[in-house]
Length: 82
Image (cartoon, rainbow, N blue to C red):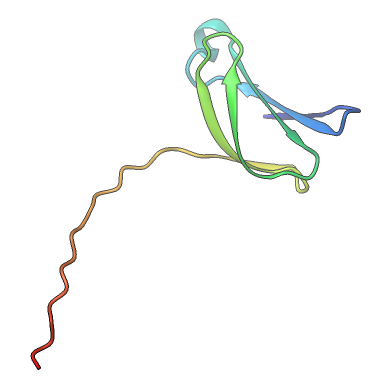
């Protein structure tokens, strides 16, 4: 991933698309402000795939957010005898 700061006060995040880079050379791109910390969605300029990242622009760090499967659990409360 590469960070490109522009004079408008934004940072453009550019990197290889996990879907099509190997075959088509696709690149994903996302834009945030210079002080942004939080989730950003980057979109491939070639295949339109979206990839979510957590970005800390102050530290110039980025983490890919991968979906996880969560299993639900039902919890029943019981009344105490009284």
